[in-house]
Each structure stands twice: as C-alpha cells, then as structure tokens.
Length: 498
Ligand code: SF4
Image (cartoon, rainbow, N blue to C red; front, top):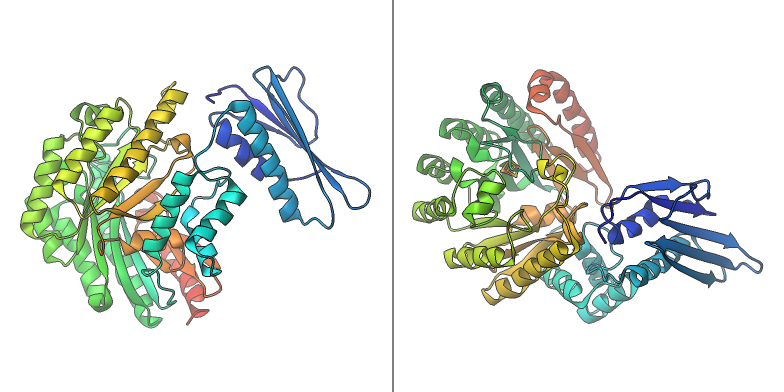
C-alpha cells in the first residue's frame, strides 16, 4: 500500500471531496492526492480514482467508481432508486469506493471504513438507542465493515465507560499546560520546547508566573458560574521538566484558586524518567495530586537512544518504585507501538517489563507521524511489513493486558497513525482516568490554562464552542493581556449554560 506518487481524485456530479479522499487515504496512506473537481483526468496520469454520480430517469441515481492502480483497473457501478438524500449518496459512493479499493489492493483495514477518531462514541450511540451490545456491534460492522477484533475492543471500552460518564453541565475538567521537555523526542508533534537551550530555559519563570495568574482568573470564572471541578490534569510537555519550586508555584495556584473539594482525580503527567526526582514526587504528592504518569514509551535502551530520550529503562523502573514508596497508588505508564528500531520482540519485552511493575493503568499508543515530527522526514519509515508488525504489537497488548486485569477504558484514533491503528488506555477496575474519558467523549466542559490549552465549552444540546489559547510560550507571555480578553468570550459562552 505504500505509495509515494501523486494520485488524482477525479470528481463528477458530486462534491464529496473530503469523504472520498478519506476513504482513499485508508488504502493509499502516504500519497498526495490531486483533487480534480473539474472531472478531468490529468494528462499522462497513471494512478487515479474517478467517482461519479449521474442522474437517470425515474429518480434513479447511478454511482460509478473507476480505479487505475499500478496498471490494474477496477470499475463498479451501483444504482440507487427512490428519493436519495445527500447523506445516503455520500455513504453509498464511499462504500462502493471502499469495496473497489479493498479488492484491488487486497488490504483489509482493521477499522474498515470508519475514519472518525472516536469509534467508542459510535458504540455508545447505538447502546443509547437500546440496542443490545451484540446488535450494536452488528449494526456498526454492517455499516463500516469493522473487523471482529476492533469492534470487540470498541465495545469492551464502551461498556467500561458507560457507568463512568456523567452529563452534568456544571461539572467541568481543568487542564494546565507546561509545554517544556528536557529534549525533543524524534516522533514528537506536540508544541513542546526543549529546555536544553538557555533561551528556552529563560522563558520558564515568566511562563510559570503568567500561568499562575491565568489559573487564578479561571478560578474566579469557575466560582462566578458555580461550576464544580471534577478533574485536574497538569500535562505538557513534561510538567516535571520544571523545578520542584516551580511545581510548588503551579500547584499552589491550583490549591488557592480552585475548590478541590469535589475533585475525583488530580493528575500530574510526570512523563520522562530523566526529569523525575524524589523532591518533585514529594511535592506532587504533598499537594494532593492523586495520579501520576511515568511514561517510558519503551523499555529498550537502544530504542530510547534512537528516539532521543535521555534516560534508560532502569531509570524508569527506579522512578516508578520511588513513586510507589512515596505513596502514589495510581500510576499510569504510556507505551508506543512502532517506535523506530523497535520490533515485535522488543515491544513484547517492554510490555512484560511494564506488567511486572504492576502500574494501575497502561496506555498503548500506535506511532503517529505528523509533519511537525522530526521522524516524519526520515524516508522509508513505513513499509507494508512494518505496518503489519505494528498491528501485531497492538494486538498483543489487547490480548495480554486484559489477562492481567487491565480493561480498555478509552480509545481514540488520530490522523497519520500508522496502519490506521488506535491508542488505547487500559486500566485496572476503578483506576480509569476520568479526564481521558471525558475529553474523548466531549460531553464535559474543559477549561484550560497555559499555552496550547483549549477551552471547550459543551452545551446541553451537544454543541461545542472552543476558545484556544496561544500556541507558543513566547506569545503566551507577551500577549497575555490579549489572551485575557478571550476570557470574556469564555464567560459569554458560559452565561448560556448558567
Ligand atoms: S516527552 Fe512527550 S511532549 Fe516531550 S518531546 Fe517527548 S513526546 Fe514530545
């Protein structure tokens, strides 16, 4: 399926440009598509996909798909009679294209034609219509051609989430961003600043000061609108990249400004082992965080070196054991399947080592490569055999982790994830991270402080308004006054659900 050449997508009689492209990308992921809205195949173009909708007599619509792929050709036609909505036409055309691409490429996408990032929501929606779990799965498989393995994963996740999800518009989550890391990992696409340079390090004190001011302002808004904070999540970056004293500053601001009386969880993403010290863990514990995350990504030292993380697997184990000694009873560990230079055996070994540590939750990400990641620019990263190896890694997690009492509790997919795979959070019963569930479910308002943070106001009818903070620390610090004007916008939105 790997394909670097240009593909033409030729459209006639419809405007489902985005949808057709999304289906084509499932099968030909590394390709730049040229969209030919004029319906004309470019001269000398060997690889193209034509999709067409024609009006015929007696309210019959004729759908055509023609694919020219590596000197093979595939053509299919389908008729739709009666009154046909745009929704039905879009679905039918995409399903026809999907079937043709499946046949011509021989590839069976694990998530079928489902391109959305929240498959679990689809299952929850079916369950809300009072379908039995089995019927809900059948409906979705029929519509999207999802494999048995993935629909089971989505259903298992939905069943864990169902009793946890709440829909009280007064309950909110709070996210606090610390966008600094000791160095930048090669696969990273976050807005995070390596503090290996003097210039970046110098930004931190002022950033922390502004962040504390913003937390205090959010505290007032929360009070004014009588909101109740259910979860606090300090993420990044790597929050423990800042000093213990700076962590105290931030967490003190949270304590002073937010009523933590109704809190169900308070997470600090400790992140990389090379930033974790006893002093910082003591601070986090003393300031009432209930959950931390220590993220090895892999327990293979050679892979850690390849991806630019300056710590060893031993440091991860030491940090974990230290955190347990200090009294943390809820620790998450993040892993990535498909890191460069890692293989199935390495991933299986990592999984075994992490299970032996017995954390409370384990999150398994499938490697995602975005343009902003250094690794994106390394040619030849993703062969067909590599995709299938990464599929085997995620399959191993979904088989082994439930055997050790870890249940899948949140699941999301990202664009550019290799093999169209997914990220799955597994947790022991009662250790599911509410914030992760709610951010994916999008049924709870989340207010954010710090750069890159987004304020997401969810209305009872399901509509969402987003107000974004500045992306980079420099503009966050220097345009702070302007940023505060956005708080007015947040208050105007909150007024609607008061
Ligand atoms: S620790 Fe996380 S946020 Fe920081 S550079 Fe690595 S991947 Fe990016």
